[in-house]
Amino acid sequence: MSIKCILPALLALSPDGFSWTKATPLPADRVSYTPGWTVGPFFHLMVHGSRDCWVTRQSKDGQLAPWILVRDQGFSDTKWSNPVVSVGPRVYAFGHWGRARTAILGPSGVLGKWQNAMEEEGMGGGKEPILWGGGACAEIGPTRVLYHVGGFEYEGENFTNPRSQNKVFFARIRPDGPLTNWKRTTPLPYHPMGASVVYHEGRLYVFGGRGGRFGVGDSVDGMIDDVYAARANADGTLGNWSKLSRKLPWKACGIAAFVKGGYLYVIGGELEGDGAGTATAFTDQCARSRIGPADLGPWEKLPSLPGRAGKTPHGFIGDWFYLVGLSAEGKTPIYAAKVPNR
Image (cartoon, rainbow, N blue to C red; front, side):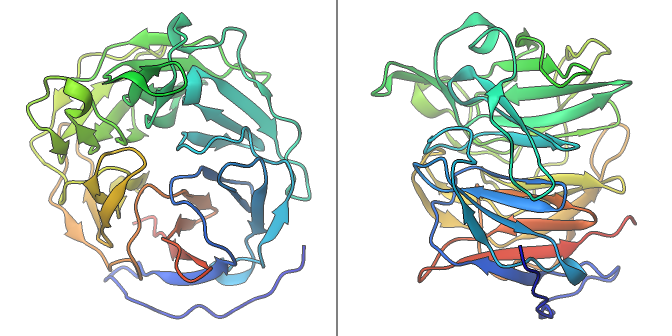
């Protein structure tokens, strides 16, 4: 894979140097919620309804090499969003249909064969498909744990009897790579689709999403700005959820989020839509808040994205954070920011 360095254009700057640049765009349209992930120095974006992937690698100053289409790299031909995380050279895709799959990155950026990551199919033994859940990886002592939260279930192939759900599942990553079977832990206080999930210093945070969908009795039927946190126990189970007093600076689902240097960063999101495959408005907003022992600090507005984005793949390569934008005129923009350690 050749590397071509393109000097990034400076778009906006915060007092500590946080700014967005435009990285090498994907030379194709893509459906925004189709999965993607970063692993090692590489960025993979699945092709909608296919097992093919667009692949690039990081080059100089946060830029990306030209994208290359690689056959048969996806974990399925799914058309739906799916939590995907990488741990070292290994990638885990989980949630869709209650399954979990894993593959290992090769030196050229090509993944090995995807395999089932656990012995038992389905979350908690259930066979219902689960879509639009959120996910995160937590490092609890010497153990890494995957969490899947919210989403919605249905029956059969035609979305029969759909219902939003507040279930929370966890699975531990074994030392040799596979996962333990899914187990259920403390459910969420609401029933979100497209919620965001991060882990920081012993607590799991869940926020945003679309609540009250499919007839459940949430107090809010629409986009959510609440933030919830629960203590993670050594065995992966969660304590009770608490609702923080500090809300998100905007209501949305599909918000890109991460924690670095003790700060929670929130970026973009779907402002209007059904929380699933239909969206009518997105945002370019970006903000961060220091995570305190009991609550979040005041939100600090950061430079806006160069364009709107929501429910799109994102991830880190080194100190650089990458976020996929919304396609237009046969191209898909990629936004990048070097995130300070504060």
